[in-house]
Image 1 (cartoon, rainbow, N blue to C red):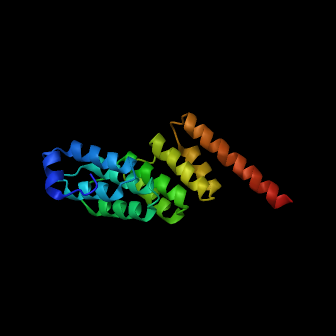
Image 2: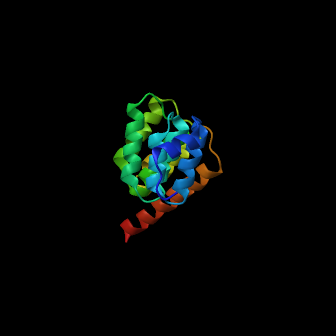
Image 3: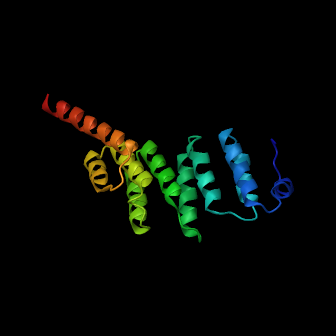
Length: 171
């Protein structure tokens, strides 16, 4: 559908949010940001899943600022982000090296009571380490009460990074 229009989208969705979500995800996977955006815009109803599909549509296609913009728009609305939303945004922050936004998301995770979620914790470790803040990554790991294989692999990467940094400082 190269030229998507509102009546067509409306008739396809028939008021079903899950159909709109599936279309957003499909267009996003094919890199068709314009049609994904149109479907999202014309959806008669959006839920948190709709937003959680739309945010990575941009980031996975290299449009990181648009991901941040959608996240900000979500926060202004009535919906409350879930752990999937926070993990997605932390991954965007890690790729972009955006420590400030990463700290904002971390603070939001704490405020929403999700900082103990293992997936959020792992994403925080990843974000802090990719932004070069290895001590903060270590602190998040140490505070994680439900470590999994990803947690341990992430912290091993942090420890190796610390050792490499120390070697460079010594020589």
